[in-house]
Image (tube, rainbow, N blue to C red; front, side):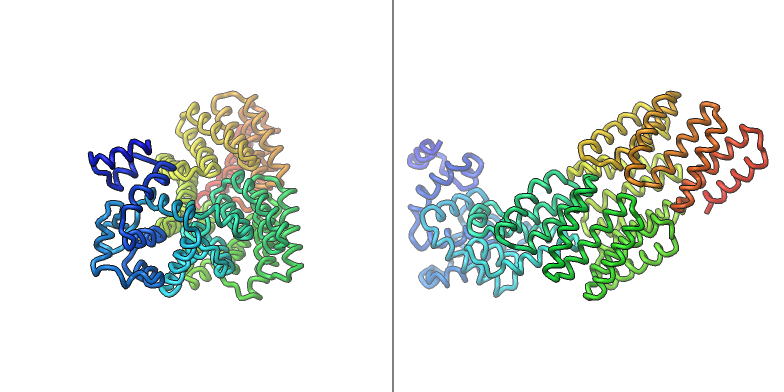
Length: 593
């Protein structure tokens, strides 16, 4: 291929342009052929300009002039040197808005950088250093960091680390990705890895955290263990503590509770050894969130109260707001809806005070979910619509998808199945686009419930089995339990009572293992309904009464109404008309609330 290109160039047929070259040749061919044929034919001053331009990700006259001036090359250039540079077909406008920002075609730029790295590595580092100085004077931290890392300059490592950690703590994913790219961009990632094991460890951990936020636990773990090993070799206790905290979060996502607690305890001990109060506060919050997901709501509340106190003592308002939201969610699961509402409203007010629209969006979703579980569907939908608007404004696709799913669940509960299906299919499309397997599983499970209510039992079973398979792959036992309960509903509707009971018993075992009282309550309700369908009215009454007690303990308004209605039907079958009427009236009163 290279020989053909050289022959074509030498004969003058079909003159080669950079645009043509980038589409016709790749990789080593370009790296070996382009500098030899093109650069060597340029006058020295033009060659120096092109090499300097290749260092820049965005080429402007100001940035390139600075580099050339520092290289003592600007004085000998003609007045129209920049126009001459842009006449090469490899330079294109970065945007179509008439801006004066240009870029060198990616493939061509890679060839130039590879050529310089191979033949003039010191000059390449010098050019990156000049570029870093320019972007420092321009106040562009992202580009300065990129060039500092490219020139093996460690002056920004600590600030870069702290900015990236802060951006991830605030879930500013786009900004986090740009900061991470400064050290991991392909044109110098390998050099950074060899130059600074510390920066490499940071990039592994931060990349893993990005995977964790996207619910990609396997990918996160593959990066976290090498990061932990590097921090241990470097004797970096803070890095070890941060990595262990993230490993704890990931383990909880996989329902590996004992392992998660082990990681978080180890992380907390290291933060305590360092007297690092902020790390302790974030670890306690992570532990509290995880305990709440497991169903250990009393432990969650205790851990989160401790985390909240620490954030308040440190004056960390963002941490305070996030922990108030977590505490509100935990208190709601303990059944204290009044206090949960107060905590969530306090979190919402603080997020607004901080102009933290991301935190505001998630808190609105928590308030909407609480209203949904109380059976206040109109209020829930209002809050979730506000959350959805903010997530879309922030271009937070994960938040948008999750909130659409919650809206689907709300409209499902209010029996508006067509709208529910619309919300859920939109959520599913986004989760698939993001390759978010947990989001897909949760949405498929909800969609299966909606389709079942619409009478499509075959379609419902397909959706639910797909969800169950994803949950099993993810090791998510809570998701498996809820999906098994939904599959029991499909089997019950088809009249297959034996299979329905098998699914419900499997679900109950998982809910009991997780100490998930809400799941146990709904499974008992379903078992009561199944006993009723078999004509076992006494057994049905006992199961439903146990279910009602659990629904009341967790203050699940919809669950109470649903179970009271089932008890009313059973009482009617038993010939107790007065009790049946009272139970059904109580159910209606809760539904209308």
